[in-house]
Image (cartoon, rainbow, N blue to C red; front, side):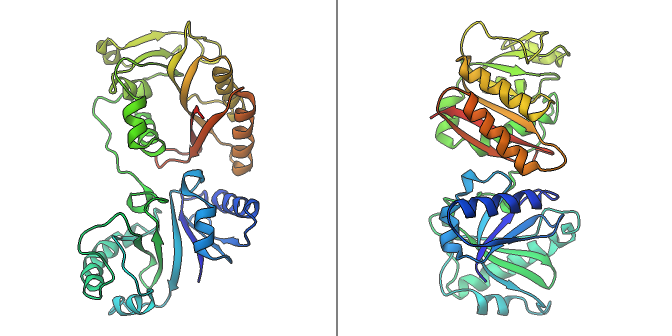
Length: 346
């Protein structure tokens, strides 16, 4: 078996399948997706994974939480000895780390105990066979074993430069007791996922300025203030009172679709609940008018044709922004029926 194995949010398998198929076709590569709705993963088969992987870089994928090169599928595993067939199937090479996982679905949650216990058993067996580094080594590929049932698993590997660093592609963030709402986790994940360490240090500095459109009750504003950024929070609704105690927040009761900043800002963030095309056009206006240098915003997707709407909105945004931008988009773990977009000067 050859191809890719990608994880996604349960229910968004058709969107990821359509995205992989279209991107592969644009790259001139053969292949076809295989999945089941609600499974939490998509396989893209029919082309060599070593060719597919660099042609479909992870940072460009929107609906994939993780991208792996598929090595094998093992069915009818004997619960008394799952290790021997895995060792017999794996190619003769060494990996830098091992992740034993299961899809992030309600149906697969009972496999969590198996994944933990099996990982503890497989690591020493791989090391004894010379297939796994004695210490985690991120400079060489990482081995993944994904159980979809107790007797059914996929073997795959990740290029650590072209994959998520977290098991299942999910950064585990905790809700801070001072956060005004759970939406704070979305912006925290976006900053962690869409910006690299150097960008986080350069672009999120104390004294910078930002606007939060549709801010109430203040989750995204709160995240920005934790970086020392001065925020103008735009919303006709109320903010959590303790946000104003920081001295970094100015609350203006105004409509985020009409308010204009008096001068250019470092950041604009937006999590307004509105039709995605309208939001995309409004975000483009901010860049076209030079009101912000970079932005993070969410696009709420419709119930149907979500991949088509995603492409349309991102194309509309890029065309109307009036300047060359580097645009990254991802459906984050803390997103629901939406994607999160980062836009910066190219």
